[in-house]
Length: 327
Image 1: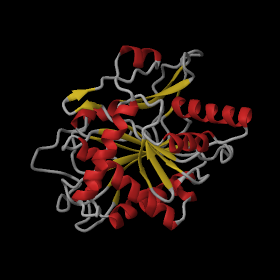
Image 2 (image 1 turned 180 degrees about the vertical axis):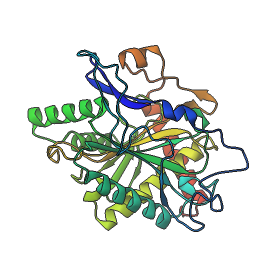
Image 3 (image 1 turned 30 degrees about the vertical axis):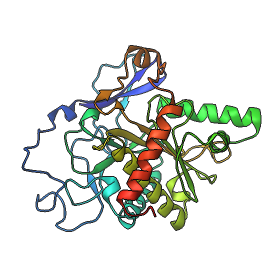
Image 4 (image 1 turned 120 degrees about the vertical axis):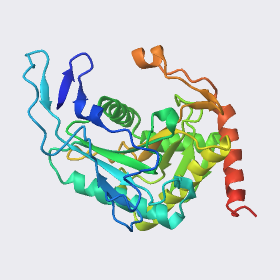
């Protein structure tokens, strides 16, 4: 069964995808994403792989006949894709070359543009779950892309608040955030010509980094070739700093926030950015998202980011030194 069920309390849709329960446990000596598996080409750099167990699909089945006037259902229309970062099974994102990550950014862009063409798609989300602490059972470097037939609640909330800020102040909220972070300085992790990486004043997580475009761009497809290479560079540097922080693979959930597709123009008040949700607060301690966070969406950070950002910035310097980029 795959369908959408409407939550009238939140005004949002829940994906029901019981087919995902049938995902097999992969043997330790087999990976479908590795060349030679028969599932992928023998030679590739980055690759779009059709999700074998999609929660959303272009040809969804009819919902179960359980809907009422209160409890609505809808077809689980959309698309789910897997994006393979590398043919090398144990290669991590910061270990890839800048040129290679540039190819990944180009593939993300191509898939965003392709999914945007479908008038039934309303939001395209590119994301990555990394590390066992985030429930990952497939260590081969990969992310995913979901095309939703609606704009999910969290994204709607973010867009609504950006629009409200613009109407009340006449300024772009992300421009104001970037300015505040640059003026304060201590929460900045990495800066290059086109992007800023910082742990914002309000983040939920001790190391909850944002990567924000400096220019008024709202999607990958807006960026020039130079800007996309800058994005590749700051992704490498930010994730490299994370891995260097505790000298281990740093788990995270990474989500790329872009404009909705097939909707209103949000250029005046919105901005392309990437949000990281890393569950570690210390090397071997998890920052749990507990009852208050889940039940009330009332975030409680366990550390002031003015204390954690310098640690991550120092880790970034060690990463540069490790790569031979620090004189």
